[in-house]
Length: 233
Ligand code: TMP
Ligand code: ASP
Figure 1 (cartoon, helix red, strand yellow):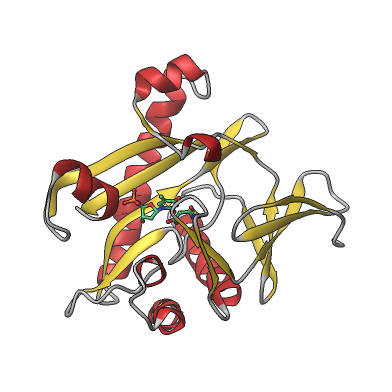
Figure 2: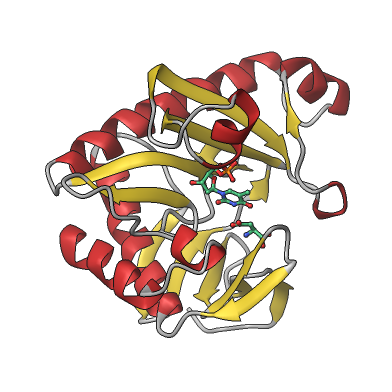
C-alpha cells in the first residue's frame, strides 16, 4: 500500500488514494473549525489523538459486530480505510440535551432525554447542514426508507456499545455524529469517532472533554483530547 494523490481535503482530514482502488488513506490534521467553518484554529496534536481515538472506537465496534471502514492504522496521523461512497447524511445520536438540541427544545444542557434521540442532517455546507426528517431524505433521494431505518437502528446499536464502554471509564457520552457510506452493496460506518464529533463529559464533574472546549473558548483543549485518549487506551 503506497500513498497516491490527494483527492479530497476536508476541514479536519485529507484523503489520499492508494495503489488499491478499494482502499484510501485518511490523514488527520490539527486544523479545527466550528460553526460551519466560521471559526478556525488549530489544536496541537489533535490529528494524532483523533487518529488513535477513532482507531480504538472502530476496533471496539468491529469487535461488537458493527462493520466499519477501518482497516488499520498506518502511522500516527494516518489510517487505511475502505473507500466508501458517502451518504450525504449526518446521523446524530443524543443521550442528554446539549448543543443545538438544547437550543431547539429550550432545555438546559445536561437534561437527560427519556430515550436516545436520533436526528438526520443533510450534509451540505452551502446550506449549513440543515436538520431534516425522513420525508426530506426521500425527497432528496439520498437513501431509501429501508436504508434510513438501517442507519437509525445501527446508530442506536452503536450508541449502546459506546455508552457502556465510556461509562466504564467514568465518561458520559452526551451525543455524537456518524457518517455512513456504501461499499460493494453494503452500508458501513465511515468518517471518524473522536472528540471532534462527540460530546464527552467527565461523569463525576461533568467537565467537557471534547471540541466544545474549542467552540466555546473554554481552554485546555489539547488536554481534553489527551484525557479521552488516556481513558480509552
Ligand atoms: P449539535 O448539538 O451542534 O447539533 O451537535 C451534535 C453532535 O454532533 C455533537 O456531538 C457534535 C457533532 N457535530 C459534528 O460532528 N459535526 C458538526 O458539524 C456538528 C454541527 C456537530
Ligand atoms: N466541524 C463543523 C464546522 O466546521 C462544526 C462543528 O463541529 O462545530 O463547521
